[in-house]
Length: 134
Length: 134
Length: 134
Image (tube, rainbow over all chains, first blue to last red; front, top):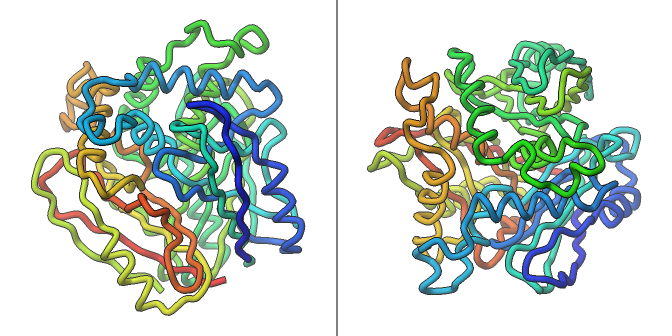
């Protein structure tokens, strides 16, 4: 089973909790045991798993990435598209996460949520969710 | 097949080689071909694959992450839990790794081992291992 | 189905587009729906997904990693093998990526390509591709 959904991001850089959308797809799939792959088909966005209770955890991650990757640090790609920093950050986090399914439920820890990171927004972003039984 | 095991970490930050535990679970599963997902359900820990022969490779990784992510760099989450740096490092490395199984064995390279990283220890940490045949 | 191919890298650090090789393996597999795991069994190399249209995106990533991880920053492993920076960078990016297969095709976004990063070349590198149906 493969399903997709859209997220409209609202800022140049943002991190959006998508756990509910993914959990709904897993519930509909009625798969008892397997894995769930959450994938973003964009080169300036990423999927990340971290704490969802305090939304500042996500904001701290964006701040930390901005300290690590200078926004316009003389990147070669900036002469073409001016968003090299967004590509670099997306590469560091990666476009997907894989979560184990047991008894029909994602085995996220108590403090784990799934997030879409957009480093070149605001935009309409697509998320693809694949549930694999086995 | 899903199995779990516990690791008691012994320092605030540590990296523990868990290859043997994962290999034992894969051997018990008797799956000839498939994949193995190693997942940590904690928001301040991560799974990473790297060299296990020289334990200093792991120590260098912890040092490098500390240079990239200041321990108390004015992070917003520190006002609540004082461990924002641990969440940021866990997000950068991610909570899981996927390894291919062939002829009943993990296709790790000669120099690759699987590690649990704890950035907010010492603690009892859970690792979930899912073997998927196919 | 598991298949492998070799890549001869040509510089100390390089990033090589391997999308065509992976797509060919997926096409041969004739799997309509499932996932594809691309894995590099080396501790100083990594698999990453990012833009392939402008090759400078990959070069910017190598530059950014060199700013984050000093080449000889007093790493402990350098006393043994002098390539600690390569291990750290490989750990940050990780040895694999998982891509969803739908209608027999990798669900890469318009701007996404799959790359092998070598941080300790030039060398002969092996890439393992596992297609899992389901």
